[in-house]
Length: 130
Length: 130
Length: 130
Length: 130
Image (cartoon, rainbow over all chains, first blue to last red; front, side, top):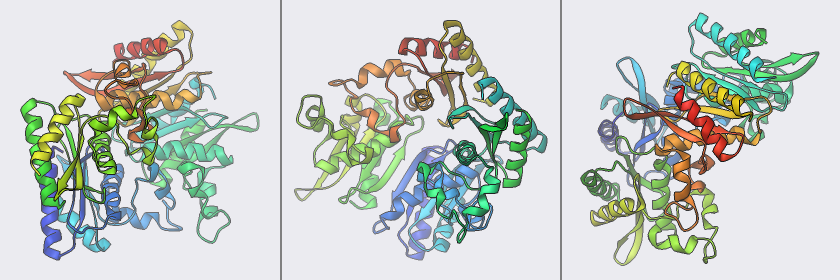
């Protein structure tokens, strides 16, 4: 994921966020799970700065969307307790989606600022911009 | 657990992981619960680096497999909340197994990269290589 | 600092970084010292992701450039030891500069990826784009 | 850096450590600065487990050896205070060296367990095994 590609993801996500009227924090990480681009829209939740970055981190960490990861992490499910690992960098609810190229995961986008449904929808728009 | 023994555990686990076709992170800790050997197979989940180490840590921390520990840590069970202790180093799902010699625990192996069933199976192969 | 303004700062800094041929990490925080925009240029040091953010944080934390702060933080100087505060978010060398509007500090830019002189120069270009 | 390549680096470093008679901790990170292989030789300092990993992390973080980084980080030098950044993952003394391929940095090796001179010598042997 180059910076140009990451910024295109951010812009695509931002356009969707504006469309639905919810200010979002949007983050993109690269293949090595390092932050590449970030934008906080005016008025977006401050507590979601960290969450957006961590949703991107989590999606790349396990090469799956945080939406798909979420049910596995609930009480009495296989991965309950996983949120305590990775130095507080895991988020186990929707809004993080891997970015793929050539059949492999090369990064991820994370979105936070609204409902988990809205976050996921905006992240999907980001993926579409990749 | 000497480094040679730890590396033998890693290799046995790796062979099983290759057999089942799931790239894994594999960690071994010694009697003092300190990391002795670690290997991340090509393509293994990045988020599982920490988890593999922590599964080994947890198995030695309580001298039981993390598979056996898991049910005790669910909501309304005796150890609920334990995952918040030990500075984020506990993992409460399957994949960590103690290593025993002469009737006492002398270390542990931790595996992460697939389903908890696959992780546990690969960890068992690691134990068999001890 | 709106997102638009923050992105203009990032772009101005990036143009200067490209001009001098040093890939940089560039961060902008707002009046509340919260991250607003971030970009890692292709090939920029991975360890400077954190440092760029922290230079911006530090410049807003004390409303002065980190270049001006640096000499005060050396051994036997008035603020020696300050780098251990603020949960590891302070950077006490050049590359962070406050953003001002209407005579007050409303945010800051932080740049990391080259020598401290280059970092400061690129940060100044970012300020000029504000 | 594949696991095979990383293990070759570890083995080359270990052979040198045995030659000079100092048990070492040896770590290898990949291009994304994620841990790939680790070995603690029998009797190696426990406190150096973390340091070996962090030396590798630091060398990849700034694409230079920690030996070259060290003088820049002393009091009254340009990068004084940098050790407080990157969540405690930076080590600013010798023993970490980048791994290069095709003219770019693709990972790093970190060694800790003896004097900084010995650590650097063993890390160099690791690089030679790459």
